[in-house]
Length: 438
Image 1 (spheres, rainbow, N blue to C red):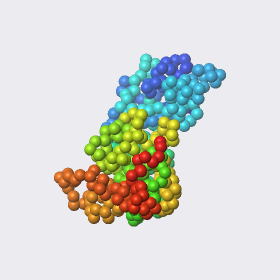
Image 2: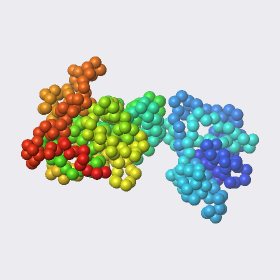
Image 3: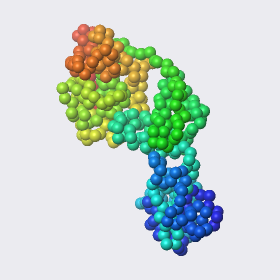
Image 4: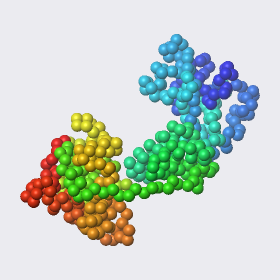
């Protein structure tokens, strides 16, 4: 074999006389031509190869290795024997779905460090990987996959996983291996320079989880982010709307989807992500004026107004139990994402002539108006499922559906006639359900 291939991480050759069957390629048990044992300085004995790099293939807490494999193909599509290329068996358009490597003619393969090499009668070993940078930091993608699996096992919320995965995807694109240089990490975090510092803080925390996980598995000896100062957060002041502004918001001519969203945001104080995660089966399971809500910290029962439940029921009609209630454009079977919800709220604000408000400000609005109406701060916090200081919620039971029905801004508007209609006019709250079509 020419020496030109020697520097590669691991080479697999098939299709040449004397080499093993190409089927052995699959599962990373592929032939690698070896010189006679007596002339091989790296292998002293055929049955006992001796010390393995990096403490041996069965060392504790070994991480899985990935590397490029050069594979020859004689499919005839390129005029004879050649390095594997698009169109060859096993590439993207074929059943086997092999992943192309970084170098031309290679594929990506993985190596289980617990795999013990085996030899045939001619001295060919099925697999001798020499992964690049074996003693260095782990591949970022490997750590992400391992930690993500643990979070899924622990039952972390879907939205939390999506948030982490978004941050990790960006980090993986910037660093193939977890960087060990603290300055490199700080330079990367410097790209997230929002005015409040909250985004940078969230990114830093998401990345730090990866390092803690890698250290816990023994993939890294130390955590370069240990003791790193976290950004100071500039807390934003609540920016609530007045009750009359809520009236302007809810009085709009809305579609069914817009009306249901507005009810949950302004009339119940829900977060936008919580609105997006409502499933059809959960709507059909509404009982005692309560619905299952996928909150920020945990999933729990939340009170819901009867007219809001009716709006949700109409949205859920015809959908499978596990389908998202808030969906995309009419006639298209697609989910409605976070950016779509933000655009929906912005458009409603624009149509109502309201400026300077976001979807989160509707949560501020709900909490402020409920507190002003009831005189009870803990009630508003409990209705929006926030932490309630000084209240042992496990021991004190409150009739939250009734309290929501009494103090929700939707109910407050019903009790206060619209100044545009006068005392005898139709109140906004009375026509909310009938307004809008899907």
